[in-house]
Every structure is written in structure tokens, then in C-alpha cells.
Amino acid sequence: MNDFDDLYMEVILDHNKNPRNKGNIEGHTNHADGHNPLCGDNISLDLIIENNLVKDIKFTGSGCAISTASSSILTEAIIGKKISEIRHLFEDFHELVTTDIEKNNLGKLAVFEGVKKYPARVKCATLAWHTLIAAIDGDEEVSTE
Ligand code: ZN
Image (cartoon, rainbow, N blue to C red; front, side, top):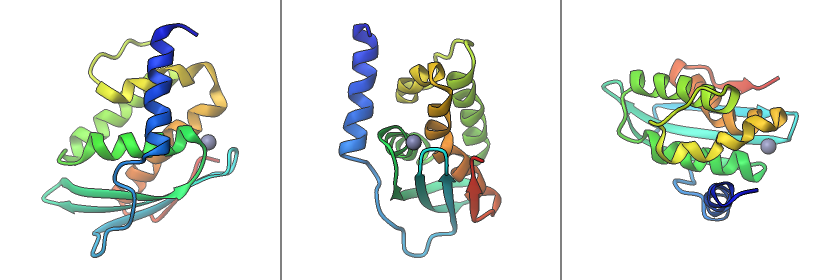
């Protein structure tokens, strides 16, 4: 592991220990539960979507460090963004963790690049995103299996 990886791991562990935007939103407009049976990760998302814009998002659930950190960093990344932007961001994030295509536009989300070396971990890292898209599309339940 080089220093770069260490820095990324530090960010992931920090978000796992001190998750941002954790909790429920009373009066949310969208909600979904996501499950990753392979690892045992479960997360729930509450969102407030107005005028095709995510005004607020919070998450609850339990899972491994990767899935918790991914949920936490996702909430920070998408608050205030348009739904169309979020769909593009998910495509870019998915490419980041599954391909060697270089991505320079992902900010803090780039810390998950290393998971592509561990295919089982890709599901941990993308669970929050699949759950987010389900919530946006009105599906209340999603599984990575
Ligand atoms: Zn996991």
C-alpha cells in the first residue's frame, strides 16, 4: 500500500467512524431500503426532492466500513444536486470502481477507486448508489443480488 492508498483509507475510516448526515428525515418525499446480502450491508435513505433537486438526504443502517463510508460520502456529494446530475455521477462512480477509465471529476468519491481490486467490495461501495437511484425512481426496496 502506498501513501495515496493510505490517505484514501483514512477518509473511508473517518466517514465510517463519524458518518455525515446519519438519521431520518421527517416528511421525506422519497425513501428506499438497500440490501447487500453478500456482505450483510443494509442501508435506508430518506430524501427530500423538490423541483428535481435533492434538498436533503439522510441515511441509517448497518454495514461494513466501505458501505457506511460510501453512504456518508454520497450524502455529502449529492445534496443540492439535480437528479440528472446525480444519474451522471452514479455512472461515473460505477466506472471508477469497475473500470480503469480515469476519473478526475469525482472529488471525495474518488477514495473508493481502490475497491475495483476487490470485486466483492464493489457491491459494498455501490449499495448506497443503487439505493439512491431506487429512491429517486420510486422503488422502495433494492438488493445487489
Ligand atoms: Zn459490505
